[in-house]
Length: 298
Image (cartoon, rainbow, N blue to C red):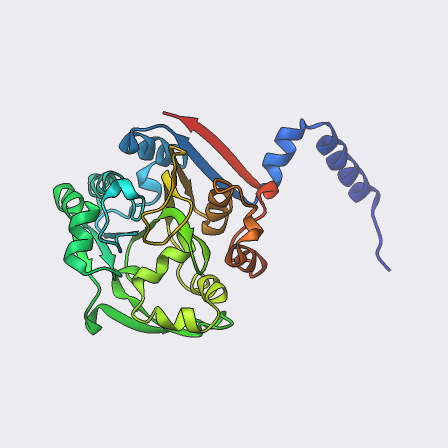
């Protein structure tokens, strides 16, 4: 039988009374399981700086003297305005900021779908990374991958993953938000497919589950979703129709970041199966009623 002391009863009663008189907004903030920062504007470097500052500054993410890895979407030989790839301006600003914060190097690995040199050049990401002092890494050699087990996964039980993603002091996932014919949307969790050797396995073995499974093993230090322009149809390559939310979305929680990004496509987060699966697997919080979303204007 459970017993309650008089002192316990008083403490519990006082705590309940205090919670009852808190403003609703403060109670919601106290109950938040994840934080998402949404920055509105058109100057992407300034937007990135403002969002990171709100989360504690670059020092909260970059380990001084260690490598920083930035994983954009640089997979398609399309120009930046098509929205097929992450904005080169945003990727370059991130590489520059990581180096300024003390990273020993800023590497940008990608296993592109288009011919590599065309993808890196036409997307603008290759030149932007070089101008910032970073290094593009073409993931086309076996030595650049390591096979690892995913013991908490349900379908993707092992994978060959880019070493730069596995071994780094700071891992930044920087996708572009866009439509995807197979996954519904491609956001941060889906973006990891550009860092594995065999993405065909994902397509053959329940793509939505594999997307969630991968995030049981690889956890980014920071997610930055480029939603400056979003392709609403004919993804992932396009060209397709675009909307221009003029936003970037930052979070430590990839599920929360993806959940918010889904709303830009007039979808509920759990309309996208891999967001629902990742939430149910407790990889992160996809329930926006339990996410603290802060909007900034730059």
